[in-house]
Length: 321
Ligand code: NAP
Image (cartoon, rainbow, N blue to C red):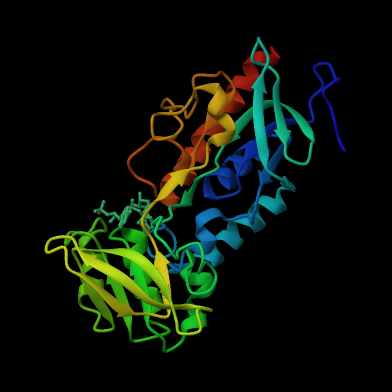
């Protein structure tokens, strides 16, 4: 076990980036290019939500690119700069009184000392919270159409939600089947008109609006998903529909439990930053989907990552003087 707690003012890294999505990778590119010794700590797989996103059509430079492909391109660029990657989970961050020493505690027990930290942990898909959802996880219930869509070739697939993710992933799933149900609790969608019209005009998508899912029911053998119990929220009528899969895309919650002691989040758990992407703690920055903001896109995540890194570089330059 690597433990550096006894080191006095001796840093393992200039910068610890927590999270390896587009915001984190961009921050690392900017920092490493400015000669900051940088590490990215990622709990799962580098790429964040990009690796779970099918098609991307609004990232400049690519009129069409698959999420995993864009992620791989970013990762290669980061690796070329010799940024270190560590697979681990951050448990806690502490700050010294003069704000010049950040201590990052990992679940492995390792402790990293750095001059600055950028949090880019993004958000995790929300669960609907209905009976059967947990029970049939990975047996028909999935949060990743890119990963699991192909398992349901020519089957009936149901998606829940009315945002970009639900609309885009419904469209993606029509590659595998001509029977996609899109169940939304209202009849207005949050995605832009172009995307919504694509959904509405796709004859392989059956829109079930003004409905919520109440239960995930098993197939006859109870080994996999077989039906959904749904309710019309206007008439209160309850009915069942047959389905082989359920993909909930009902939004996400920020991954910020590990900073709850620092009092840097808003009431929804998103990190509050200023226009420099700095939290109220000097030397502690945040970027990407994890911060309190209105537009969560890959392009805004990379924007935040660049801003956070650039101002952190300035911060470190100043305290070195
Ligand atoms: P979102 O925009 O928050 O939409 C969540 C949807 O799920 C809403 O339509 C909401 O219904 C519905 N919903 C929430 N809780 C529900 C529940 N308990 N039961 C049933 N339905 C529920 O989430 P998202 O689509 O995952 O997108 C997250 C963020 O990423 C957004 O900021 C989005 O713009 C961004 N994003 C962008 C793109 C893109 O630009 N290409 C792609 C993916 C994601 P109501 O509408 O009734 O609230």
